[in-house]
Image (cartoon, rainbow, N blue to C red):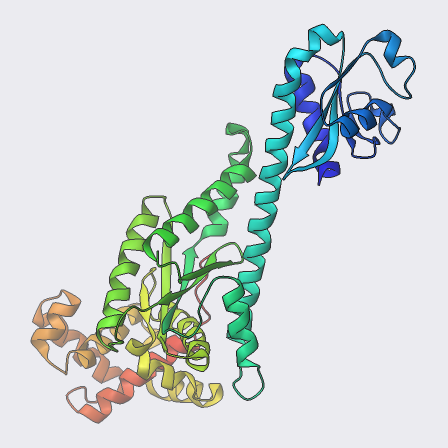
Length: 406
């Protein structure tokens, strides 16, 4: 680790104090130096500093007797109670000694931060692996106890009921591209993007804040949350509570300039159910994005019909759509006509409710209904014939390629 950061510590410290600096390992070998020719050579004074565990000064006379040493000071670098190397500053000892403690503390802080960052990265990867194992869980083939143990090792009890959320950031890749295009206006676009991602994850964890909630990022624009449900499970109340949290999250993300769609799965009372919850959340997101042209919250149980239709063989579905509503696509207002069919059927064939849903006058509604009937030959006042048109519209949406959100 010291080897990885040595030259960075040297460059920054040397620039600040105005003197040449070097870093060695605990065996006195130079890892980083203002004078690159010294890298890989022995700095003998470092051995004495490590052995005595304190700062060593070496003037011209002393340094001339030591291999690879110039006048200055050498200070041991300590990390977690262990001396891992030394920091040397070149110059008159009386002049450079005032920088010694400052340079030592800076080096040690940087090393500790690296350890924390590395630990965080390792934990994030371990959580991603845990999520992948839950996603692949098969009760007949997977060792359930092993998976429960892995969860406990990361601080999570996987036995309590949870519900899965999949958060999809809308056009996030476009946002990051814009940041790169504006790179000339900022010091580092990558740092800004990383800061934005950290901020997004922080917002998610603040809303889903139970210490047993598992939140991980998947790629650059998606997050998965296994949200633990407290108290008794209520199949109706729990999802409504989750939807409220999701609405709050969408509002908070909007303040960052980010739109998001969220898929909500079923309640998982055990690992098998949690596996199903995970895949249900993805299905909800996938179906929901086809049913609407804007980011929204999609709960899988709100798409029972759409999910059922999605299992129909593609060629069968295409044939049904072509036979039922293809003629409507030839008209420039076909989207309007499709929305009218949907609103009419979802409003129980009620003119009053349909008009309100579409925000149009009843005469306009009747005009559209008559137009649809003339084109398709179907009677929209007949439940069965109206249902056929409705199912055809739903199948058409399901067959459409998924709308791009990146």
